[in-house]
Image (cartoon, rainbow, N blue to C red; front, side, top):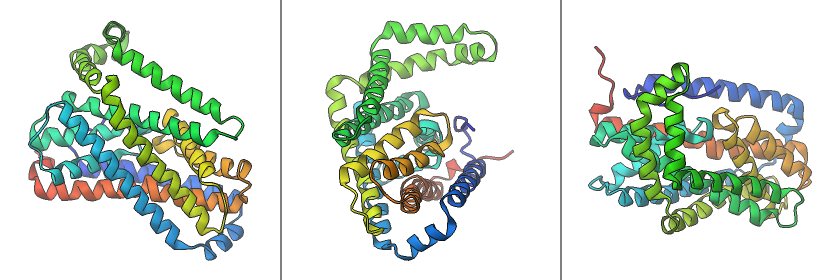
Length: 334
């Protein structure tokens, strides 16, 4: 299952349908995991759970969003996009979470379409921010994996894979010759891919040029530090949830498990990394941390609700407020 790029009409009903489809897929997946793990055992674990830790994990996720909003503001400033009130900018940023379930979260380019409708800013001017956000997110997650992997066999392999991905992307973006060749090559491919590539080539080249401005070494420092801090908060959230189950799992192991699973889920072409991220969190807690299977499953379920599905809820709430403030966001039906 893949996500299409958000359409220019910002049709909320269509977005709701897409999210509901993914939610149904997630419910079926979690149901299968639950049957495999054991319904009675999981139920017993939840009866003894300290729900304060889940609330704290949601609070840490919200703080994660605020730190990432600072990155959004940082990039808008670099591109010279000013005059957007801070609260409206925050709502615009959060509205991108309605498609956080897209593979690799690339659907968060939705917020660029929101800016187009509310402020008339061309999508190709702000879309590179989403890629820059993903690059710095990966750098931050790799840093978490590297720190957390100290003492855990196999962890550095994940760190190496993530680092190679980051370096490859930065080299591609930093080399005008390489990126231009790839875009031109895309437009020459046979069939529909070539026709679409040819039509989008000018916008892609403009977006790549803007992306080069955002990913110079000096401009990677602040966003990367924000990424390390923000994603560490969600790793801390998993640790707190484990504390709610009376587990003494080290913070480094919880952060490592969350970071490696998040990285793997971002790489696979599945909405929200469903199935991959979930299973990896569970398996790593069980195999590396000695956490009982029922507890590992329960903790995975709660951290996914506190991060992935909480983000979707926040995104729709922000979009609803924006629609009330900007009637132009409502689709004009003919």
